[in-house]
Amino acid sequence: MRFSELFETPTVSYGTTFEEICEDVYNSESDYCILPIECSSNGKMFSFYSLINKYELKIFAVCDVDEGISGKRTRYALLSRKTLVYPENTKPEYFEISIIGGKEYQLSDILEAAQSCSLSVYRIDNLPVSYDDLKFRFHHVFEGNRKDLFPFITYLNYKYPQYEVIGNYILI
Image 1 (tube, rainbow, N blue to C red):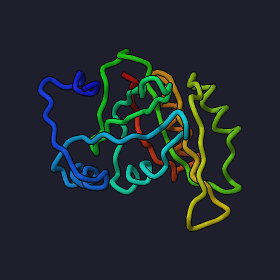
Image 2: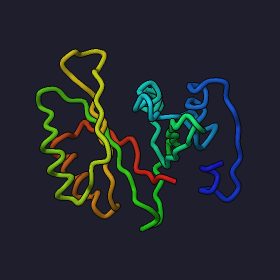
Image 3: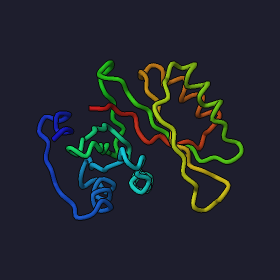
Image 4: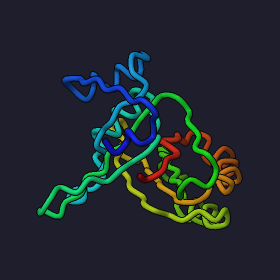
């Protein structure tokens, strides 16, 4: 229901597995799907991020859902294969990327570049890459305005051309 406010006449279909709904978007049978991506008690849900990578999905919007009296919160993502752009100045935007890196990865350089582009760090996580014990997939989430992204993306293209955009999204 929370994501339906983004559409004039939303329609819904249901799948039996998360993989099935991602395949529907990948095969253009559906425009969007919804996956949980973060839990307040366990952090990022990397198994769902692996589906995002596998099916080449991008985060379009996220929302937080409180789980009642337990105090736990789950963050859900609305995902698409399309590149979607919000009207200027809608809400603060988040820009999420992943970079696979080893010794050449320099977090301090990325943070310095983000700061010089007026982007704030929202979150950084990492996960070992299964095929190489010396490499990690670093997930970076920055908060800022779209106009500040261009110089930062230029920096990433130069310094870390292997980076992947996970999404440019708003929190609703």
